[in-house]
Image (cartoon, rainbow, N blue to C red; front, side, top):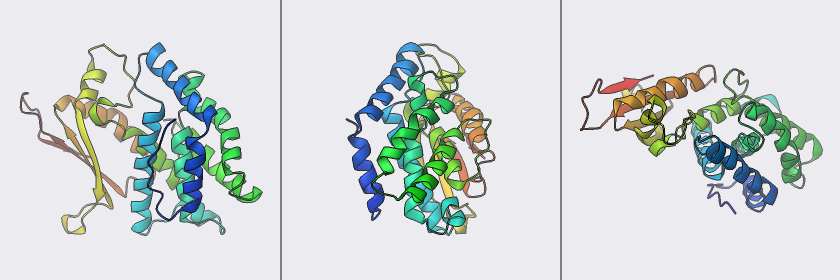
Length: 263
């Protein structure tokens, strides 16, 4: 069974939900099936338990940094009875459920994820939230899931966070651009060039935005991952004004085309 090692802090609702998720055999099996389809049958990158654990941790980190800087999640802004703990529940649940549709097929997996996620959300939240609150949370979680599809506009901060967190799972070759294993092309070469991804608080003294994402590349080809995936994923998420991406090329065994790239 997958252990998430999520920093729940003082969020007791999130703590209970993580415990339930870690014991959910059906959900864990969907992740297994997702990787059978994505990796074994299609030769694409991981879309199972490791991926969703990474996305959940990144998403919670982004959300908490934004909240600490004074940004209000949409569920807090739009519903009087909701707070930041509930926003964390939305982000966590959307993170772990956004790719379960791969268990059916990669094509239209976002829509399939919605269908598979609904009963999981309902049973997970059932004994934690009353019906009205549970319904609000379900709506917000499903919106965040469907909005990680590239051509659908995220309408909430939480949904934008999921889309960006999904794209940021690129360290050590874990690219979100699907590429077939064993093939040498711009997708595979650029994916392997991503060495490290770090997220930190921005410095006002250095005229940085609220959050800075530092990406280290061993080869300039990694720019393809940043430009083709991350840049496009960030567009229209609402996070552009808070998030700054800095890319450094550190490889010494290549002829460097550029030394730094920033969006």
